Image 1: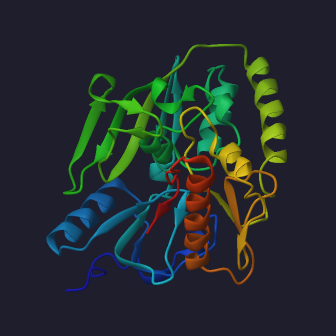
Image 2: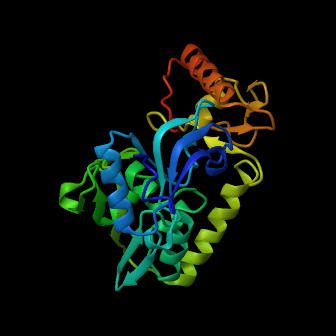
Amino acid sequence: MSLTTGFEHIVRENEPLAAHTSLKLGGVAQYFAEPTTRDELIALVKRCAEDQVPVRLLGGGSNLLVRSEGVQGCVIHLSAPEFCQISVDGNSLTAGGGAKLSHFIATAAREGFSGPEQLVGIPGTVGGALHNNTGYHGVDFGGWVRSATVLTRDGQIATRDSDSLSFSYRQSSLTELAILEGRFEFETEPANSLTKRMQKLWIVRRAAQPDADENSAYMFRDHGGESASKLISDAGLAGESVGPVHVSDRDPNFFVAESGATSEQVLELMKKVRQQVADRLEIELQDAIQVW
């Protein structure tokens, strides 16, 4: 029995993944699923476990590089409204794992919840931000979490409260297959103050990042208090390229993939930058981007 049997309405075969990533590169997924309800998601994950089909979860695709040969197994994308809801109750905000981080930030600012406005301009989803403990200049996503509802790899739903969670630099203990929902609490501040701050930060960050119409991604983690952007620049690598893939002139920690670029050229440029930063600065850069 094929994996698609009984799931024809939510599973496609040989789905091109390039369109689902910010670099717009990479091959196809053997199976690509967009469940519309939790029940469908659970049933599909259990089928994959029974059939020993590997499962990966795709978020916003902003920190993902897919190799040209593509991905075996099932890639699940939680893009349906069921997984993207955001609701407010007092000082608490609940958001689905598939909700866009930009929507989460805008909702928090509108409701007078301070903190998330500092993350404006960072792409991705709420689930990805929880998993990676997304942050900026001392503000970390995990600091607001009160609980998280997750789906395990064998299709079980569980709730993790804040006492059982741990967060560190760009990582968390939320390593289950999927983060279905998070509940957050915040300090409050006048909404108009937060909105003005968010707008100013947005203008500054957009000016320092590749243009929105460029295919780009953020590549390396900061190191020991030094930004990866500064380290790459200090190593003299701004503008470095491999074929049609180059280090961004605006922010050297972004790679830009021009027309005709391949995933392998991105990997080659990553290796080149990593090696030269190590040779010139004696610092080992760690990848921020996931490679499938």
